Length: 138
Image 1 (cartoon, rainbow, N blue to C red):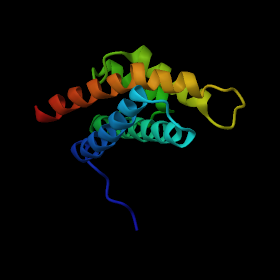
Image 2 (tube, one colour):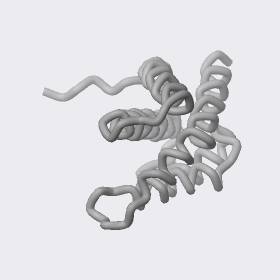
Image 3 (cartoon, rainbow, N blue to C red):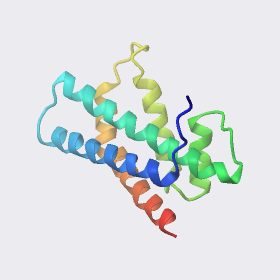
């Protein structure tokens, strides 16, 4: 049985909830040193929120027949050109950080990734939420 396809508005609701969780985890990490499991929770929450943002991009472009995209980078570039996001370079860095963090690689990037989530990415994701809310209201 196929799952019903969610609209941009429905995806944005899911995204807002995930972003709220991410913001709580991020605030916690600013106030205290995170344990290993709390660090994993923060990263997992970030990845979930980012995936939902990519799903919103896809749903937004579907009526315009601007699909399929070859990957998250192409999708992100298109979102930048459509003014869904305001800092395309930082969003591409977000994707690169996720790739670098992949546990398959032996490079220890977790500390830098956590720092980027807290200092840059949460703010970018919040601005995206505001932009999409405005676009979907019009």
